[in-house]
Amino acid sequence: MLGRDRLLIRCCYLGMFVQALVINLTPILFIPLRGEFGLSWEQIGRLVLVNFLTQMVVDLVCCWFADRVPTKPLVVAANFLAAAGLWLFALAPGIFSSPYAGLMLGTVVFSIGCGLLEVLLSPIINAVPSESKSSAMAMLHAFYPIGKVAVIVATGVALYIFGVASWRTVILAWSVFPLVNTLAFMMVRIPPFSPDGARTTLRSLFRRPVYLLLLAAMFLAGATEVTIAQWTSAYVQTGLGYSKVIADLVGFTLFGVGMIIGRVWFGLRGDQGGLRHIMIWGAVLSSVTFLLMSLSPFPLLALVACITSGLFISMLWPGTLSLSTHRFPLAGASMFAFLAAAGDTGAALMPWTVGLIADQAGGPMAWAVWIFGPDIPADQLGLRAGLLVAALCPLLMIPVLHLLKK
Image (cartoon, rainbow, N blue to C red; front, side, top):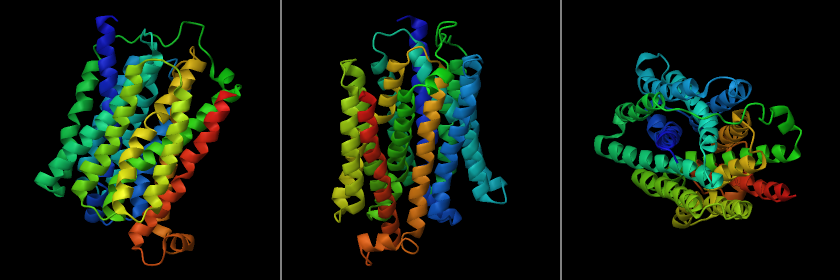
C-alpha cells in the first residue's frame, strides 16, 4: 500500500470517528437537556429522529450526484459542517428565543455533515487497493465504536468533574476533531470509485431483488444498532435506576467496547467467509438482549444485556455493506448512498418510536401495564415497553439474511 493511501485511510478512520462523535454526543446529554429545558421523552427522541432523517435526506440527494461530483470537495465540506453543527448546538440555546429550536438547528447542520461522511467514507475505502475488502470495511467501521467509547468516557468524566452545566464547553472542545479532518482531507488524493464506463447503475441495482433485500437488511441493522446506542444511557439511569456515571461509563461505554471487539476481530481475521452466518447469529443474540433489557426484573441482568448487545450488533451494519460490495463490486457511491438512506431511516424511526412509546405507555398503551404490571414507575414502564417493541427489528433481520442466501 502506498504512503498516500495510508494517509487517506487514516483520514477516513478519523472521519468515522467524527461521525461517531456527532451521533453519540447528544444521547449522553439526554438527561441534562431534559432537566435544563424541560423536554419530554418524545422531544428527546425527536432530536434523534431529526438527526437520522436529515442524514437520510442527504443520502438520497447524494444518490443522484455522488458519482458525478468530485469527491474531495464533498468530504471536506462534510467535516466542516460537522464542526459548524456542534458549535450551533452548543451556542444556539443562548442566542435563540427557543432553546429547543436552537438544538434542532445544530442537529440539522451536523447531521448534514454526518450524512455526507456516511455516504463517502465506505466507497473511498472500497476504492483503495486491498486484498481483503470486507476486512478493510470492518476496520473502517470499527472506528465508529472507538469514537463512541472515546466520546462517552471523555464526556462523562468531564461532566462529572465540571458538572453537567459544562456541556456547552465540552461540545466546543470536541469540534476540534472535524476541523482537523477538514484540513487533512484537503491534502489527500482520492481514487475513482469505479473504472470509467464500468459502473453498475442505480437502475440496474433496483432491478435486482437481492439489492432490495440488502436495503431491508440495512433498515433493520440501523434500527437495531441505533436504538440501543441512543437509549442506553437514559434507560440505564431511568429504567434501571443506576447513576449517570454508571450509565455512561459502564453501560454505554462497554456497549461500545463490544462493538469494537466484534469489528476489529472480523477485520483482523481476514476474508475467511461465514460473514452472513455471523450476522444471523448476531441478529438472534441481539433479539435476546433486547428481550432481557425489556423484560428482566433484575437490573443487573438488564445492564449486562445492554453491555453484551454491542458485541452482537457489531457486524450487522458493516456486514450488510460488505455483502453489498461483494455482490456489486462495480457500484459507485450511489449504491452506498441508498444503503445509508435505508440504514438511517431505521435509525431515525425506531429510536423516535421508543421515545413516543415511553411517553404513552402508561396511558393510551394499556398493554404495557398489562405486560409489566401496575406497580412499575411510569418512566421505567415506558422505556421497557419501547425496547420490547424495538426487539422486532433484529427478529425480522433473521429471515432477511436467510433470504439473501437464496
